[in-house]
Amino acid sequence: GIQVEQSPPDLILQEGANSTLRCNFSDSVNNLQWFHQNPWGQLINLFYIPSGTKQNGRLSATTVATERYSLLYISSSQTTDSGVYFCAVDLFGNEKLTFGTGTRLTIIP
Amino acid sequence: NAGVMQNPRHLVRRRGQEARLRCSPMKGHSHVYWYRQLPEEGLKFMVYLQKENIIDESGMPKERFSAEFPKEGPSILRIQQVVRGDSAAYFCASSPTHGYTFGSGTRLTVV
Image (cartoon, rainbow over all chains, first blue to last red; front, side):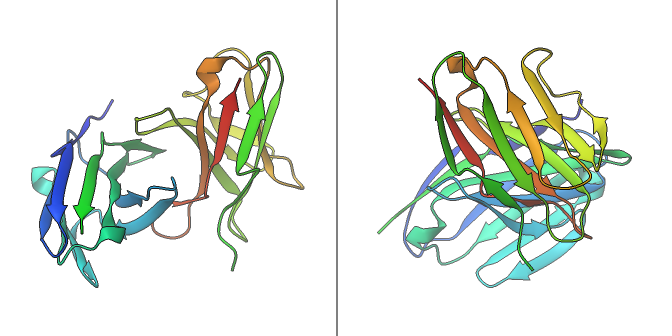
């Protein structure tokens, strides 16, 4: 099956810092999404981004499908950004998401 | 437009009891996907259902687990004779036009 790897596994930053999270995947994908799982366990959909670049406030994401990676950028980090960030992909004709290993982000006031 | 609704949010069962988890997809959607998240891990696919049909159950454990999505009412994930290893968060999702939207999950604790 498809492999999805995320880096770094853990990231601790001061409030106000910027960060880049990476997702590598091993095959051509139909769908790629970034999720934020907050400390209460809720899974929040950040971006649907199988290719290209999108921005939403302090967050933006870029997927380079031909090179099989995606990046999530968080600028001016806030404590509420803490949690685990997952990327997840599915394949053409196969409607089941494979989740990456996650990046645990901790923002220190 | 309500999102994906799951209940209960928390469920405690003793070993050997049955657990029933419910999921109603987004309004107008007839596809439901169930995922399991063990502690400190990512989500793993379990089963994909349409109304009255199981489309893909390749991620379901062979024993004690079953899922259904009847013509009327929510999808049900049923775990019989629960064991401590079943303790996890169970999420369901539906799939609007672009991407998947997840419910808030049910956290099952087996004591």
